Image 1 (tube, rainbow, N blue to C red):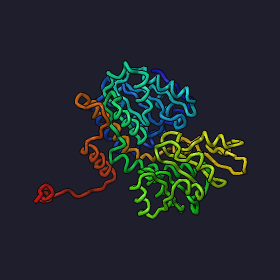
Image 2: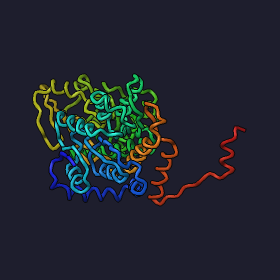
Image 3: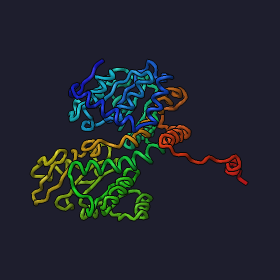
Image 4: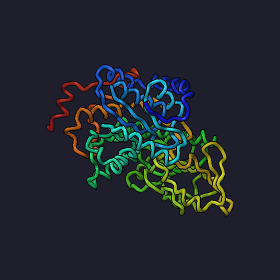
Length: 415
């Protein structure tokens, strides 16, 4: 076993937190018990590139229970929980390469180290592992059965690869499952992004004007939770349908150039670069708080902000003050990276139970069907998606109705 973590002495604390979240992830635990019996990954090398959190640890242990030899690295340099990484090494023998705060060079080295193990399946979040394999490990590609992708940003990258004919193996877009994006993106991001902002700044949300940049499922969640905390929510969008939906939901919709003038807190969730550009920064008022809840640190134009600033000072953990020559001060949270994972603990375990059930079952689906899957982006079959929902409802002791035979016949008849 090889590893690179911050401190193995942190392992016991990490173990307790992993166990705490395991109790809130009944669907994943039921899959883990089945995997222990059936061993769907027996003898396979699986590479995992996800945020190293208590929730991810439970996914890794589920895949390991299925017989896999798992090697893990972080999908973000600032999202690793060092005690969790230590516990996976010390208590479960997992080879893991992740240290909170690792620089770009170390981050890339860890990606390479994981791929050097010659995995046959990739589990990714943001597509850095998959992209690195396609660029630097061409000889490995024919041996890879497939991959899974966790998040919107990664799915966009995979779809771009497919469109250009560059995708060398099938990928299951976990994010496209209803039991992922309708819950993780909306309820998970909505709660955890606001939690990260509050932890970092201790600011009162009530009475503030909060600008949500992007009204996809993540943006819907952030807007909903911000309004619930008493904020006046402004939405910016490029998609006319989603902008119209935001209007119908009662939010104020403005172009970013106008929203920049009135916003006090900004949250980017677009999956694109420069949702907040240098031009927008020029229009913002003193004291603006800038947070990103998208996967990569490109949504806020930090290069332009650094060029505008005459001084940059740390004010609190994960809060940097940028002072401009005209006296205005802006506050960037978590270096523009995922605020919910940098300044907080990420999504609650109860919602990641659904997301990581999708990850585990997507990996099993690829192993069972890779020979018949084309090299493109796939979604999990509907019956697997609905099966996850049923398991969650059962765990919550909630019963639902079933169609009668007469009702099924009625729905199936065009007459």
